[in-house]
Amino acid sequence: MFNPRAIADLEREMQRIGVSPEGIEIMARKGKFYKIRLENLPLKGALILKQEALAAGMECALPWCTASLTCDTTDAILFGTKRQFQILAEKMKMQPFKGAKMAEEIEVCLENLERREYEVRAGGWRIRMPPFRVMGILNVTPDSFSDGGKFLSVDRAVEHAHRMVEEGADIIDIGGESSRPFSEPVSEEEELRRVIPVLEELDGLKVPISIDTYKPRVAEEALKRGASIVNDIYGLRREGMAEIAREYDAAVVIMHMKGEPKNMQVNPHYEDVIGEITRFFRERVEFARSHGIEDDRIILDPGIGFGKRLEDNLMIIRSLGSFRCLGYPILMGTSRKSFIGKVLDLDVSERLEGTIATNVISLMNGASIFRVHDVKENVRALRMAQAVMEAFA
Ligand code: 7PJ
Image 1 (tube, rainbow, N blue to C red):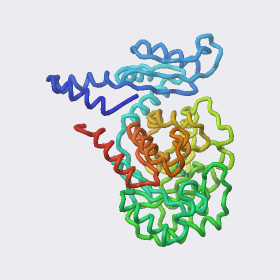
Image 2 (image 1 turned 90 degrees about the horizontal axis):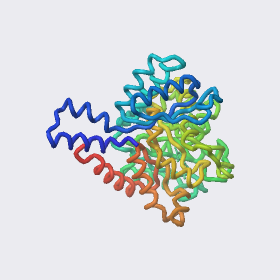
Image 3 (image 1 turned 180 degrees about the vertical axis):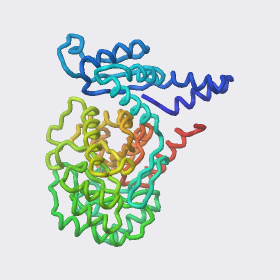
Image 4 (image 1 turned 90 degrees about the vertical axis):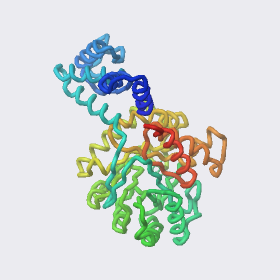
């Protein structure tokens, strides 16, 4: 939808034919095309919104029930240029039936969609983006689907972590419970037994460590031993997790998952996968904030493969940009996952190229952090993609 590169190219082309700086500024706003969805609007407010949108020369799509006046609330899809959105927001500020609230939502979303830089605080670390960041996966489980068992001994896990850092990993993500589809949970004790010795050996590592767990106690023990990010596939839904993240000033990855690993791939179904994940993110962000977790400690992750069909995963990668409306950096975990195997008909050991393709497109669509097994190869591909995206920008 909104492509900052295309705008930069448009501005440069105007410069080349000698357009004045003032003129470029005014006109560039008409070259930025956005789509924003507003939810749960009162019917009367939505009808005013539609009138004002049309008056500004843009569009506001509403469902049939708003024309027949048979619903009380509705969603709306707005699309138009940045200039048109600005005119619309000014007009809506003065309107009744939640006009001011809609105006504010439009302005906040517009600002977030244009945002290109994030800084995440994780314990004492500050993680700036861009550049993109790569999170290297360190599985210390006997049953992880792609490298299960390989890094079970502490020494080998530690060695692998160091190798990933040498290859360009900016974060090391340690996990002691497999969350592959249909897997059974492991006990807290077993998970601790797997991850704690590795964490102790990684003391002093020169990049931040994240702990891939949904168990508050495992998170706490890891944070005590130097981890600074809680990577939670349950999105802080387990009792006590938010409090612990807050207490240790950790950053949190809030991931979307439908169901649990045990049952998530049993007939997953969405009416509207992007809308559903967006609502989940909004609710979870509010929850995190209400527990004292600050905005610059929050990372969002749509949870590729967690209760999603092939078409859902593909749609999420395509539509990633719309999550940027919320204003948080986006993490993507596509590495070697089965949707790649389905498209390419390839076994898990043969999914590197597919992983790279999904990561490059996600980068272009606004993702900032990439969780991968193959650090060196993904770093190279993403750096190359970034160079093309930033050429002359
Ligand atoms: C993800 C994860 C992911 C985040 C796993 C696997 C399954 N954490 N942990 N995002 N996936 N944040 O690596 O295939 O996609 S475990």
